[in-house]
Length: 252
Image (cartoon, rainbow, N blue to C red):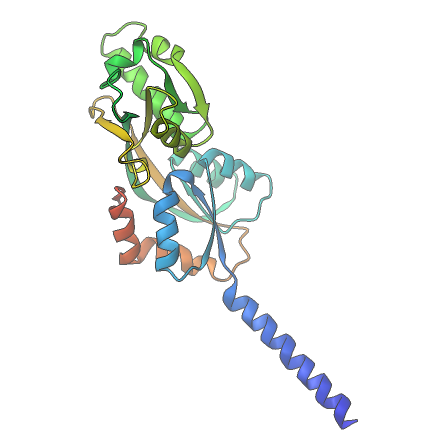
C-alpha cells in the first residue's frame, strides 16, 4: 500500500510541476507587421525570448484574427487595421506606439531613378500590394505628387509597376536584388541586409505619408503573460531604445 501511495503522490507532484512549468514558459503569441521584423526580433531577446512572432502584412494578420486565429498581441503598421479589430470587438486595449515614413529606393548603381519624377519614365517599379499599409501609403504618395500639377502622373507610374508584393519587406529585398529599378518602402526597411545594395532617396514631407503603428492586447487571449508583455512593450526603456535604433519614432 505504501508503494502505491508513494507512486500516486509522486505522479501528482510530477503533474503539478508540469503544469507549473507550462504556465511559466508559455510564450506570448505576437502578430506583428512585417516591417518590424528586425526590431521585434531584437526586442524579443531583450525581453527574455518570451514571444513567438508571427510576421506578415498587417491586413493579412488582422484577417487571420477575425477568422479565429489564436493570438495574444497584435501590432499593425496603420491605424485602420487596428480600428477594424477594435470595432469588431477583438481588442481589450490598445495604443499608438510608433511612427514611420516612406522612402524611394533603387538598386545600388542604378541611375534611372533618383526622385518621384523619374517614376513615369521607362522604368520598372515594385510596390507592396494595395491592401498592405505600405502599398496604400505608396499609392497615396503618387496621388499627392499628381495633385502638385503633374496630370496623369499616378496612372503612368502605376503602369510601370511589375510586381505587387504581399509585404513591404519583399519590396526591399527584390530591389536589393536588382529585380526592378525602384520601389517605395519604409525608411526602416533599409537595414543592414540591404543598406549596401540600394540607394535611398528622401520623399518630401508634402508628398510623404506618416505611418502610425498601433499595438493591441487581444480580448480572447488566454495567456496570463500577455498583459505583462503588452505593458513591457509600452513602458520598457530598452524596448524604446531598440525601436529608435531601427529608425522608428517612438510616440508613447
